[in-house]
Amino acid sequence: MQINKEHECEIVKKDMSKNQKDWIQYFNDKGQKMISAPDIYKVAKKGNNTIIKSLNEDFKEDGEVTSTRIIYNNKNLQAEIIHDADSKVVKPKKYKVKVPILNENFEENKETEKYLQALFDTKDNLDKILKTLKKFGKDKKIRLWTPDQSGRKRKPIRSVGLYFDDFDRFDVGGYWFDNADGLSRGVIIDSAKQSKKIKGKSK
Image (cartoon, rainbow, N blue to C red; front, side, top):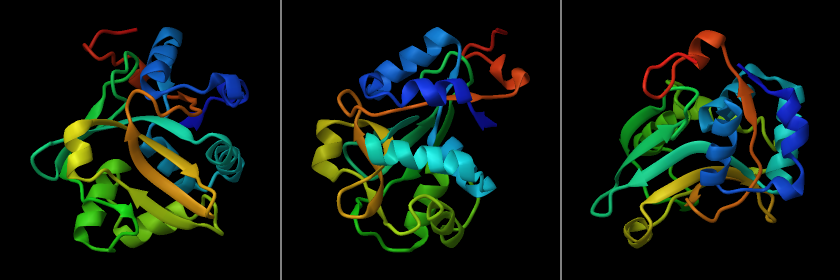
């Protein structure tokens, strides 16, 4: 799996900033897969320094909007995490998991580990996940953010974005589904996987 070089050049323009809903439509119209949180994690895990550097520029400029979506339960901490949400190119992957309320600081416990494993579609333990994320912005502190229960009740559907903030932090968060704009990218995938449409029809 590789980041699409053509879109890497095209999408970083500031006038291309969009929210998750619009990006999904954009890539569906082009017949391409939109980058997900697991795609970004795999880039760091493989240590592709060229793409890591390029993504870091996105994180700094306007943040990276992914195709990963979180649908929160308004009564408890359970949620559904969906990768490649609403894609017509690949079949979305879903996890049901407890998502702790995180206000930037976080405890390194099993609850956080299970959340991040679902968020990045990995079986890596928490220590490995955090070390992998540190390949982005090595000099920055990792911060995690999720809405509190009132926020989940008010707006249960959130898009996942990654960005560098003004306080030397690398933030991973679940933001407003409809108005959190940022940059995004297309991803080159195997033709066999690309043929798996959301309804199981070939391309």
